[in-house]
Image (tube, rainbow, N blue to C red):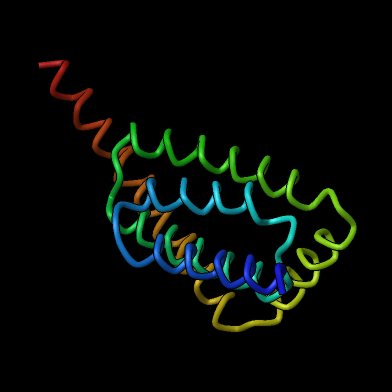
Length: 141
């Protein structure tokens, strides 16, 4: 019963973070949730979390972030990896995590979302680099 309660709480928190606010703050909330509850998550909890994070990443990259925001996002990705590593130290948690990854690799919608995220990321980084080049041109004048 306790595990079910934690799982449902984690899902609700993930959905709340994805539904409102800025992407960086939402990602911080998801990371906090993983740190607090990830060790007790089921495969379905991990799948939902990854889907939410991908939707959040797409929102972030489509917002045309500036250099400072990109740097913050990159730091969060490092923090996310540490949180996942810590949460999956138990064998049961690691199995749920790995099974979620396998399931998502077979999910065409998730793969399409991944492609959208990569495309938006590439576009945002390219635009950011172009903006930097334009700023350099202004400095030359």
